[in-house]
Length: 239
Image (cartoon, rainbow, N blue to C red; front, side, top):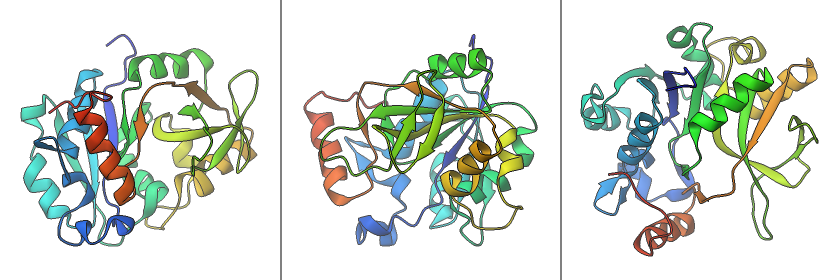
């Protein structure tokens, strides 16, 4: 692809506590959707954007995810796994996988975030702006419970906790994120312990505005809404 990014990380280690009891015996990435599984869509979405290699981090029921996705061949991908005997959080998981990416930029996608955002366009924005990290964001609507963030006129992310946008969980990361995050092996949050530190150090965190469908499937209500949206044709599942 023209954007030149070939690697991605799929954050799949979470416990899925808000979706219990569904996730007591099934990891969230393996939840069924319209005859397929959530992770099948996410991996095909990445492959369709020109990604060649995906690192999947594993903790909760990780063996089930590995057994299902395998080496990635059926998705047109190479899949590598980053095992977390102790769950490390979004930031800690990325830090633990640093060896897979070297100093090249890579895509990060939450395993539970359904989006049709154009990854190539986000990657091109990242390259053009010279940002250390670029977050795909949406405008907050009334009733949204997502953490707000503030975007400056030039598109850079100014702060978290206030503002009229939110982070969708899809991003392009450069190597500076590894320098901002705590030491490997420590539990860390990507926003609190990585992106906020990057901003404080005057590193550039850019944004790419997305205006299409998004659902993070983080609660039973959102999971049911996703199933209905797919049935109604509001979102096209790649399975």
